[in-house]
Length: 249
Image (tube, rainbow, N blue to C red):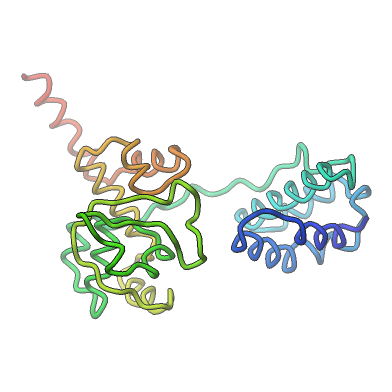
């Protein structure tokens, strides 16, 4: 069976979420179909895949390999093929991400125009944009923000259904992601940066990483831990003073 034929068959029976399937289809159409669509599943070789990945950017290389692995894993599951040429193939090494975010003090010192409250709300509650944009006043009660849906329908995962202590500043969000992004980009950050602001605020407030994981709606605690181990330059400067105080007790 041709790779393109199997991809179309897989889209029809896939059980992934609609948003994930939409992303799969778009990525396959743009990147994988031109390279491998006309090839037979059984004829695709490891070196062809590896050579293809080397010509891509690190992030695209990683996504391409992940989707190819998914297509071959499911093809074996449904007995369409017995071969899996993606085993032993590696994507290009990803660069160390620059985890840029603002502290709460920095967020609070900036006037964010007509979206002043929305930005502060994100920084103080850590919602994803897709969760915040569908939020209404009815979702805030009993001193908590109740998150149980997103712009795409269901939340990203079961762990994303959660309640977060309400601190204030809620106002309805603009329906377009780009509208808010234009305002925050003027200050060198993205909308997602404010999730990191919230995570860092939790860390500085002494909130345990497992509690932070639940508040952020992370399914994987390692994702939360990666944020918790992010440090600012002034934290290194403070280590000596903190240790000296500790040993002088």
